[in-house]
Amino acid sequence: MMALSDSNQTGTGDDGNAEAGGFIRLFAPAKINLYLHVLGQRDDGYHLLDSLMAFAGIGDVIAVRAREGITLSIDGPFASRIDAGGDNLVLKAARALRSATGIKSGAEIILTKNLPVASGIGGGSADGAAALRALARLWGISLDKSAMAALALGLGADVPFCLEGRAAFVGGIGEEITTAPTLPDAWVVLVNPLTPLSTPAVFKARTGEFSPSGRFDAIAGNGGELAALLTERRNDLTQAAISLMPEIGEILAAFEVLPNCLLGRMSGSGATCFGLFADEPSARDAEKTLMAGKKWWVKAAALIGDARDLDEEGKV
Image (cartoon, rainbow, N blue to C red; front, side, top):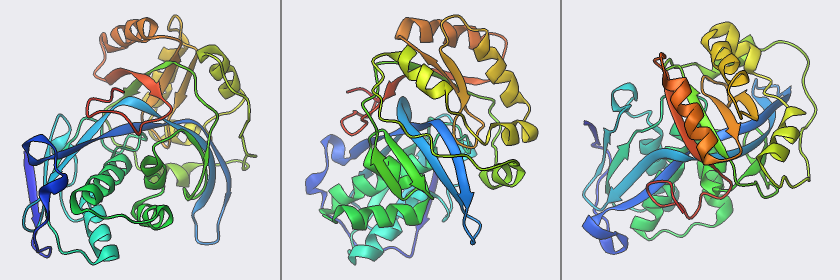
């Protein structure tokens, strides 16, 4: 377990909101960009995006309990690949919440890192959002929604969406969130080549024209109907990501020949890709096939439209 103490944070907190064992535990689900269009670029260099974002039933876990100071410990299969220093979004979230409220309480924070790092599925963003929610509960803080969203945006473009916890069309640089139509019951298989990919590098490598918005009002009744809607849209960063990491193209090609795979696509700026499946048995079969002979991270999970009531194992 990697651990770091932030000696600049002092004070004690009230553990009256803590669950069994003194810890409040929250699930931090992976996010998936079902499509991602780049609409333009601002004068400050930030790109304007339009994306339909949802969640998967797999993710990290944040646990917090009251103590003096702010400490962060990291365990889990990807603990050794994450920076536990001051740039960690979990520590940034704790600092931002204390600064915004003036509270002096402290917390012991444990991050169980189950998701690959720098992988396009919002692991750090989900962790930061879960930390905000967990610490607000621990410290008895009640900020209005707009104030909490502003804190989240200060941490990163995907953090407001992860904080919202529902499938949504996300625009601007991440601050424009519009609830999406209800998603159908479906499953995804996530595949990552276990090599981090830099988001700024992918955006720098992107070429071509900007795209129009891809938003829609239709409600997909099943996975096949959702795939049909998504096929009319795309991820505008795919070719740029493949130019930097050709293995992404190999993963997408593997999805194309899988039985029952309705759609294969890259999420975010990569390198994780997902295959969309109508049901769990199809996804589990694909998971086994993709794991054979490859040193990829492969996980099947339910597609989640509303992650607000998930337990720490990602189940409703």
